Length: 51
Image 1 (cartoon, rainbow, N blue to C red):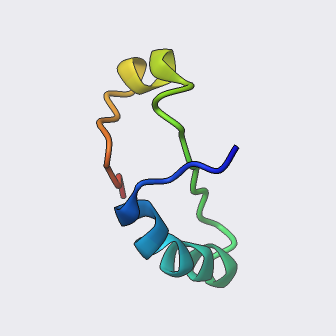
Image 2: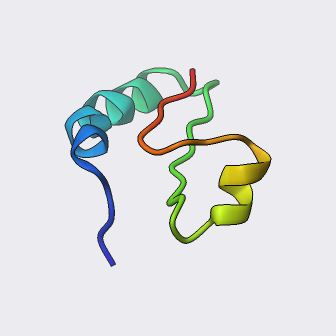
Image 3: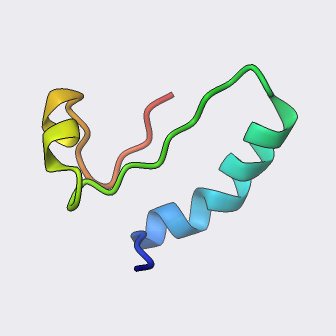
């Protein structure tokens, strides 16, 4: 299944470039609809970008 809101789709290329340019940085993509417990535990609203 493909999932991502418009904001996520828009910023995805920049995130991917950042990951490639910064090997010491860990970035995660969370589907808050399928991982509701993780979203609640880590207080991840949708859409959201935590840096």
